[in-house]
Length: 173
Image (cartoon, rainbow, N blue to C red; front, side, top):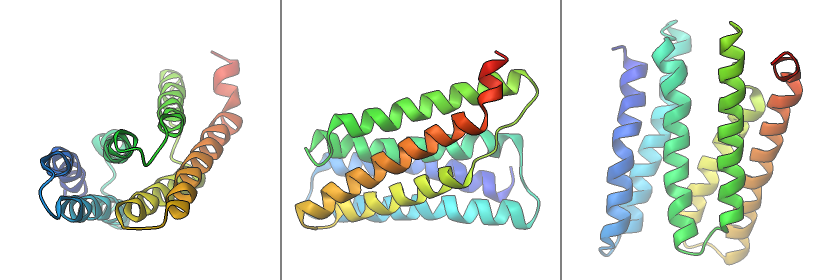
C-alpha cells in the first residue's frame, strides 16, 4: 500500500477516536477531538498532493479517499446535530447529495466512464472541513449559523453541478 493510501486509511482509523473522545466528554474533549479532526483533514490534503505529484493514483485511492472524507465530515456533523449546533435538514442535504453523486458515479462506471471530482466538489469538501473546525471553536451563534449555510449551499451547488455536467449519463440509463 502506497503512502497516499496509508494516509487515507489513517483518516478512516481516526474517525472512531474522534467520536470516542467527543462522547467521553472529559474536560477539553472538544479540543482533543478538534485536533484529531484537523490531523485527519490534513491527511486528505497531503494524500492528494502526494498521489498527484508522484503519480500514485490507485483504484483504492479513487474509492477510499472520497469515502473517508464523507465518513469524517458526516461524523462531525452528526455530533453537531446531536448537540443542536446544526439542523438535521442541513445534514440531510449533505447525505442526499453524497448518495446521489455516488449513484451517478456507479451508473457512469457501469458504462465504463469515470466521473472525477469536480472543482465544486473540492470547494465543498474544503469549505465543509473549515466550517467544521470553526464550529468546534467557541464562536458566536451567528458564525455557527453561517457555517451551516455554507455547508448546505456548497453541497447543493456541487451536487447540482455533478448532475448538470453528467446529464448524459442519466439520460442514457
